[in-house]
Length: 285
Length: 285
Image 1: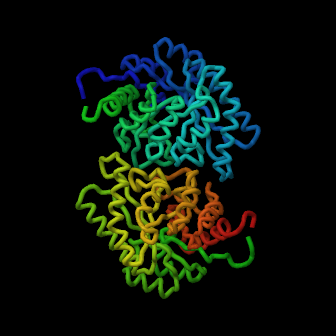
Image 2: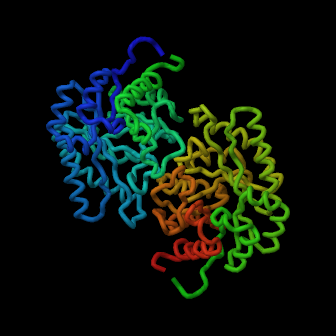
Image 3: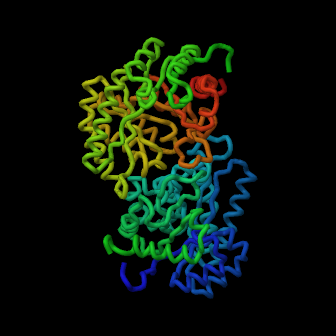
C-alpha cells in the first residue's frame, strides 16, 4: 500500500454491489470517494425513474459503464418470446437514456421441461437478430455474458466465452460483443485465448470482476466474493483483457449477503481499496 | 413402462447413493432387486474391513464397478504430497482387494493461498507418474474424474474432460483414463467430442450418472439429483459413450440429503426404476 490516493481511474462500481444504497446515496458516495464509473441495474433505475436517474448520474458527472441487464431470450412459447423481446427493447431504450453504450445480456436458462441446451442457444441467436439492429439504432452495444456453468439450467445456457463469441460473431462487433467476468470464466483454461479472440474483433464490451470464494451459498447466486478474498488472480485477468486491447472501465460487481448487510458507503470504500490493492498495484506493490 | 422386470444388466449402484445402508444391507438389497454392480467408497469399506467387505461382495456375486476414490494430489508441501501418494497407493491396494479394476480419482483443489490452477494440474501429472505404474502392477486403472467447474477451487482443479484427457494421455490407457459423469460434464458443448476422443483411446474407465437439479444446496456438494428429476438427457449421454465404444457398467452416484433421509432400500428400488425408465428405455418407451 502507498500513502497516496488509490488510482481509481478505471474503477466502476456496479450498483448491485452496494444495493443497500439509494441512487442518490450511491452517486454522492461515488463523488466523495472519487469513483467515476457506475454500472446500473434496471430495477432500481426504473423504481427511481429512468429520466430522473439519468439526470442524477449526469449531474454527478458519473460515467454509466453498463446497464444490467437484458436477455432471458430462451423462451419457446411465442407469447413469452415476444414479451422478452419487447422487454429487451425497453432495456435498450433505458441504456440510451442513461447514456451508457453497453447493455449486458444474461441469456436465460432452459425452458421448463426442456433438456436441450443447443436449441436454447439457437433461440438466443434468433432473438439477437431482432434486437441487435434496434440496439445499434440507439447507440447501444449488446454484451453477451457467459455465466458460470453452474447456472446453465436455470439462468444462462451460455456457459463459456467461446459459446458467447460463437453467438456474437454472427453480428457486427458494434452490435454484439461479450462481457468478460472473472467470476464466470476463471476456471476455464480456454478463456485466455477466447479473450484474445474477443479483443481482436473489438468485442470485449465490458470487463467485470468478482472473486471466487467457497463454500457457495444455497442457490449459489449471491456468492460473488469481495476482490482479494478468493481464488482468482485479478491482475492475471486484467493482463489478459489488456493484452487483447481492452482499455475500458473495470466494473466490480458483487452479489453477497455479507456485503449487503453492511453499511453501503463502507463497502464501497472497501471495494475501491481492494481494487487498488489487487487489480491496479503490481504484485508486492 | 412395461410390465416385465426392468433391464438392470448394466446398472450399478454407487454406495454413496444409499449410504444409509450398511454394507451387508446394501449387498442384500442388491441381491433382492437383481442389481449386479456396486461402486464402493473407501471410508465405509475400511470401517467394515477391506477383506471382510471383499468377501461380502464376492459372496453376494456383486461386481465392484469402481472404488471411490483416490486423488487429492495438488499439495505443494512435500510432506503432504508424500502422504497423499501413500494414501493413493493404499487406495490401489484396496481396489485390488475388492476385485475392481477402476479407482476413481478426484484430483484436488487449490492449496491454501494459491491461485494457480495450471500449476496444480501439473502437480497432478507428476503424482500420476508415480501412481500409474503402481496401479498397473495391481491390475487397477486410474480414472481421472473432471468435476464441475463449481468445484475448481476447493475440490478438483480438473474441470473438463479435455483437461482430464490432457493429463491421462501422458500415460498408457490401461494405466490412466477418465470418469465420465453426466453431472459434471452435461453443460459442456465440447464434452461429446471429448468422449469420442476418450473412447477411441480406450480411456472411458467408468460412466456415472446424476441429474442436474436446482436450486443447488449450500456448499453444492450434495445436490446431485435423482435420475429424471433434472435437466440432463440421460439417453443422449449414454449414446455418446456407446458411440465411443463404451460397453461397461453405468453407475448411478447421487449425493442428496433428501435421498439419504429416506429408507435406503426404497431409494435403491426407485433409482433402479429411474434407470430403467430414463436410461435404458427408448424415448416414449
